[in-house]
Amino acid sequence: MPLGDAEARGFAWGLLGVAIFGLTLPFTRLALVDLDPVFVALGRAVLAAIPAAAILAATRTRLPPSELRPRLALAALGVVVGFPVAATIAMTTVPSSHGAVVLGLLPLATALAGTLRGGERPSPTFWLWAAAGSAVVVVFALRAGGDGISGADAWLVLAIACAAFGYAEGAVVSRSIGGWQTISWILVLSAPVIVLPVAYLAATSGIAQARPSAWVGFAYVGFGSMFLGFFAWYRGLALGGTARVGQVQLLQGFFTLAGGWAIAGEAFDPEALLFLVAVIAIVALGRRASVQRR
Image (cartoon, rainbow, N blue to C red; front, side, top):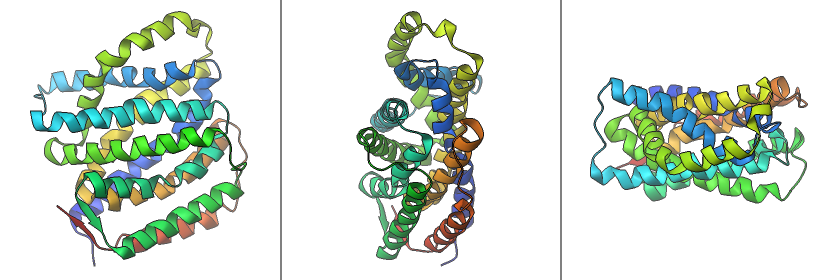
């Protein structure tokens, strides 16, 4: 069935978010050259909370309704604490390309979370296309340097679970208050909890000796991945649905591999273009599968 205007715009916003998220792992590895992993994981949320608080104050945005605050807390637990910490720890021992292998399963996990927490009911056809897309992405990432199974995969699986439920909870809130308001409140409300451990690590981990390149990586995962990316992502999920728009994440691994090549000097496989065409075709076909939304 043809997509409505809202769903089409949801895909566009989602793609923008995925493009920003796709460079998270390469820039994380850049930051980890000189910075403590936990400082990078939690500090990026503290950094992003600064512009978030400024925007909320400038627009005099009111606190979200009390019934939405538990969902905001769950979203914060997933995207502010769970995913950054787990993914950052994994990136201390494996390259970005390996992370792309496991994170290729994130669209499936996001669709499942949207079903469990967002009241969405994807059709069997949708699940078939979603599984096919994930399979293609995982096969490509393995060919491009997945390096087999490692101990870091447990952290990456935890990162997937945290991100998927954080996306689903935030998407529900976004339908009521908007995408940028959702991520802004997530960051501002979680900042008091994480600012003390970040300050402690800043004082004890020797960050003053970090090179400028590490701070560039940290700045990107803060302002880009943790702030601007979620502006687009939550808006896309709210407009087009968590399960449906979440499939755009199938393209994230290609952004990650390209970023690893350009930023971290990792190998780039020219066959990526063939796999990219296949994934785009699967996403385009999967868009038309039925997903009921409450």
